[in-house]
Length: 131
Image 1 (cartoon, rainbow, N blue to C red):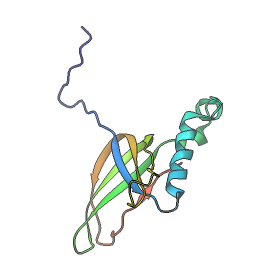
Image 2 (image 1 turned 60 degrees about the vertical axis):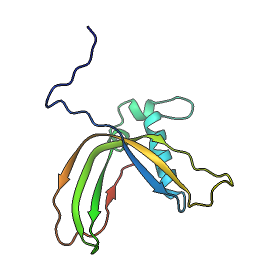
Image 3 (image 1 turned 135 degrees about the vertical axis):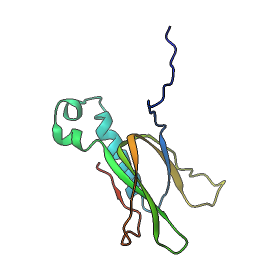
Image 4 (image 1 turned 180 degrees about the vertical axis):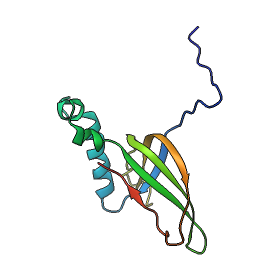
């Protein structure tokens, strides 16, 4: 009758919201380029993106690894977000009402995530995002 129902084992994942502290606009420029790669050109042409070019299609999704750090600076746990892509890019407030550091949000859709294991040599957050 058109109603959605949930069953055990059927996984759905909400978007992953990330807050980025803006330092030199490099990360934002890369995310904008990534989103334009997904959407096609500003004129609406999508031939290069969705027309069968495997090089462009392969770079439309990325993976990210999030590492939880302990108070001692050692890595405690990690999660890998698989096959993600940006869906929303938040604004940067540029008015005079705040003197806070510039920051913005990015929402990522993703296929799934996995909980990883760490070695004693892992001590930094690592990301690998293809754009």
